[in-house]
Length: 601
Image 1 (cartoon, rainbow, N blue to C red):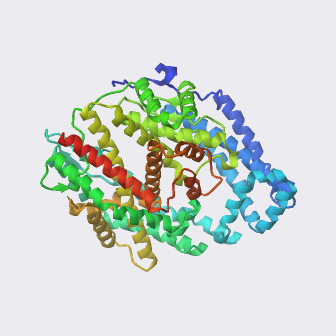
Image 2 (image 1 turned 120 degrees about the horizontal axis):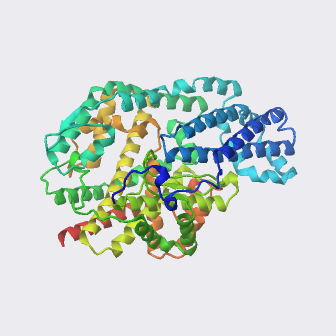
Image 3 (image 1 turned 180 degrees about the vertical axis):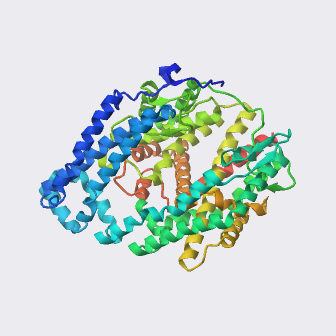
């Protein structure tokens, strides 16, 4: 779909989101900002007395809630308006002013948690009996007290906070170095053109059909990482050491526990991911064998594994209206109410559809408790764009059902379950299209997209999770995280996850250096649990398991009243069960066989 990058003012309003229900004008935004500034001063009157009575506690928590809700509204408006056109400095300035207010709120309300934790939770329970309105905050208060064993005395917390910026130095150094200073040089294309390599275009060129070219790209990029391996190893060691020190000071068993604790998850979940996916490695080998056969290669190297399985001539385009209908058809299995609310999203301008000059790239679902769950897209009409539409609407419908069925305090959901609803939609769309599409090449394109998602999420992220677990454990036992150690450790895992069907080229030993997630420890496993959970839910729905849809809808409405693990059980997912991980591996295998059948037909 040809799409000229028009100025925002020339775009059809039918395809623009409507932020007027957040604030009707910038003037209204500034008025609300001034109101929050006034409210901040109210914290002082409760600082020394908020635990003196049940009513004081209620009014203090209510003030904090009202400030948070207003800040959410201000943030949605300024960020969304800024994302409409990044060249408009008006909203950049507004965001900066809002950040100053966030800082003031943080400072003025900083007494809340330390003061609360001076008291036993029994005191809170007594106050709840005296003041029933406090029940609204029961979940939030319990969550505060959950951290009590790991919160230090006030002076020690203050001392640690003084070092917070120092603790961030390693990851900030890595970010600046890899985004600003690290250069990969250039390579010659098959037409003789010199192409400058960047982190942004590396993946694109690895998908080139020209094998010699993608090999040059692969070797050139990792040659640069090899050159700076010692430097990057030092920054990663800094991140790992900081996480270990912080965990020890606070009394966690280890750094992994400190990162899993916020999601109320223990190491059993993490280990189940690694163990289950390790047992499913033979299916990954089937995928590599399929790719090797389709590409007609005697040897499959890592730089071959990113080439699209689908034929070159699969370039069907879909208007936004066509994409909308595909999504509505695919998701109709979720019931009338879900489709009614999807139509509201389309008809009430929750979605900002097309690119325009200066618009933020990519796609996301946003909004807050008191606004619609807005969606930003840059829709160009590809199959991937239709899939992105389904994905982001999955997030937005999850947000919509959560917010409309829960009070503010539990009207959100954990990051641990955040990718489940979006992936359910993506899978339902892909599997629906496989059923209704008759063109063989289109079917191959859809299958290729799904297979790549499984390989990149289910297996690759598990390999990353296994690497993280090992380096943190070894560091806790006294291992120095040198470049050689990190490269050797990563290379052994790369061989395990690629061989014997694919060849783990020696350059891949440096790949850990370009994985930004390693600098935010123990996050990547959530991608795996999200996909596995979605596979279990989709399998149950499409096999018409009794009440599968009803249970899934209940999950979407559940908010954060329970732990993420318990919340998933509402949808019929036991993330501790091998069955959940196996359902994802089984679906991956079925898709591989379906592609092979088409290839052989």
